[in-house]
Every structure is written in structure tokens, then in C-alpha cells.
Image (cartoon, rainbow, N blue to C red):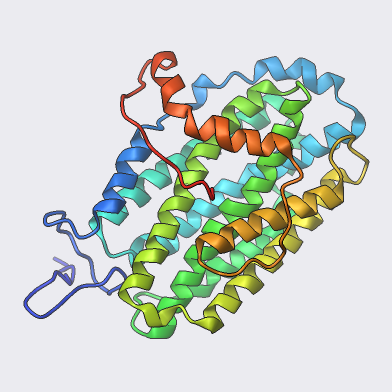
Length: 346
């Protein structure tokens, strides 16, 4: 029988979040804020069957060729985006966050990623009836340059710590923090937020309401994933303040700058046929605005100073997050009482 090493706190020993081993003790609870995140996530439970996409089919037929191209590229990105995040969670995050409360949340997040994957599979089945076209969407990470570049960015950061079995050194822990920050700030917090902007732009035009409805649920999940990841970063910084220095802050800036350029290339692909009401300069400004918000959460000076050119995204932040539970309890058969608050920076 294999013995699992425990790093439980003993006399004179204060265990830290990234210490190697596997702490199994939920009482006394060392990180109750992680457990609170887990409980809040449960309140956001939803199923793919709640989202009716069939009403979107008439809208798809009415879209201009440029809009159809945008939707096609967007669906191709969705086909594998959440699977990449789930892979990093399983391969990298779970083994190094040495906290049973934290692992409870990560287990819940993995479930949510699986629901997102199912939602996007249903989206492809509904929007793309042709089997060959659906197969092509799933191979977009290899065949569509703008999506391949984003995938390569993700894979680079997955591989950056994949071989680490435990975080033994200061450099190991810094590498792990960079991975956490990358997937929270750059992938879930920038790549996905860019995708959400296209969805809510189309909703503001009165089309694809089913897609927007499902995206609302994903939006809330992703906001909570970021909140938890930044909680992990803040906890580690409090426990080991020397890890996060000026050099690491610059690495985060460089990482986000690269992510912005990846997403701008994707935007150029989506918008290259001309979309009335959404221009490439506006999309670049929006992405820079989002990147600055992620830096602010990390206590790093902004790089761009860009504003948000999309009023429909400001409306999304206010309406969908702050009022979610008040509206859902009466509308959803398994709704629960209680409330959850989100940081305004998400």
C-alpha cells in the first residue's frame, strides 16, 4: 500500500499552501475562504439542457457573410478552449495546491469545465449540422492560424510546469504561480472574455439569444474561476512574500502583452470581412482594458490605460453578476437561497 506523505501542521511547523505533500485535514480549516468559494460555486449549478439553442437557427440564416464568418471562427475556438483549461487543472493545478479546501474548489471547477465542454459540443451540433464541418472545428487548433497561435500559447504554459512533481524550490513556486496567473488572467480572463464580447455584441443586435443565454452561465463560472485563482495567488504572496518580486511582475506583464497580441490576431481574423458596429481598433482597446484590469487585481501597474469601448460589456458586468441570484431563485427549479458577491474587477 502506498503511503501518501502528509505535511500537516505540527509543533513548530507551519505548512504553506504550496508545500509538497498531500494534506487531508479539513478540520481545523486552514483556508476557509477557499471553502467559501466552493460553496458559492455550488449556487451557480446549471445544466446544458436548460439552454435552448434551436431558436438561434433562424438568426444564423439571416446573418451577413461577415457575421457568419465571425460565428464560425468563434464556434471553432469554443470547440477546444475549455478542454485546454481542464487539462491544465488536472495535470498541473490539482497536485500542487496542497489544501483540501482548495482541492474541493478545483474539483468543482473541473465539473464546470466539463459542463462548458458539453455546452459547446451541443452548440456545434446545433449550429453546424454538417459532420465534416464539425470535425474541422475540432481541428481548428491545428488548421486555423489565429486559433493555433492561442493554443500554442496555452500549451507553452501547460508544459512550463508539467514535469514538476513537487514544488521544492523558490523557482518552482514562481513557475507555478506564473501558470496559475496565465490561465486566470490570460486564458479565462482574456481569451474567453474576448469571446464573450463577440457573443454579447451579437445579442445587442438582437440575434443569437440562445448562445447569449448559455454564455451567461459560462461567464459567471469563469468569473468565479478567476476569483479563486487570484485567491491562490494572494494567499501564496502573503505566505511567501519574497516570491513575487519586480522580475516576476515584469514576467506577468510580458505574458499578458503576448496574450493580448494573440487575441488581437484572432480578432483580425473574425472581423476581417467588416462587421458594422465592431472594429478591430475597438476590439484591441477592449482587450487592453481587460488586461489592465487583470494587472490591477494582481497589484501591478497597468500597461495600456485603455478604456472599454463596448457599453454592452459594462451592462453585462452589472446586470448579470450583481443581480444573478435574486433573479434565478424564482426562475430555476433547483435554485438555492443565499448570495454571492464578485469582485468588481471581474
